[in-house]
Amino acid sequence: MLRVAILGPESTGKTELAKSLAEYFQVDWVPEFARAYVESLSRPYEYEDVCRIAAHQIDEELFYENHPSDGKKFVFFDTDLIITKVWFDYKYGKVPKFLQERLNCHFFDFYLLCYPDLPWQPDSVREHGDDREFFFNWYKQEIEKTGKSVSIITGIGNERLQNAIRALTSFVSYL
Image (cartoon, rainbow, N blue to C red):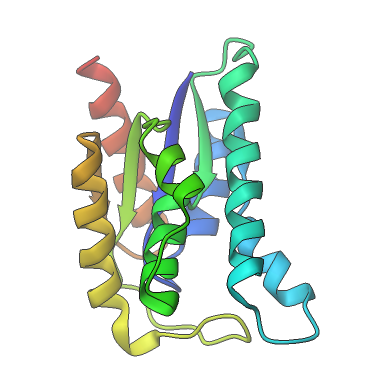
């Protein structure tokens, strides 16, 4: 089973893309935990909250690391620890050692990086609508450090999904 992470700045269609790809390939997808966690708080999130989010993300990875694929070709993750690492560094100026150690395991096989070409959709959790290009470039640099393959996904609506399907098909054909 190939483990695929879908990354990108806020409001770039990661969740919709993860759901749509899982439906198209009839496989599992792992929703973003951070959104639900932060929405459930009755106060602003803090450093320790982001640590809990990272720990949960690691647990999700470990589940798929330790369970057979049941013949499924992919599992899609709506975000990964790279985004969490960048957020720690950006907001707090430090990254927990446990998170960096897990990133060094190189869990993912392939990355789909969503380009910020979709209109910004503000909500109660999103914070940086004017900085999406900045975060896109930072995520791209972090992915490149892993040495793993990445495809930048553009397009609106079904075009975005079709571009992701083509990227995945191309990646699999090279294996």
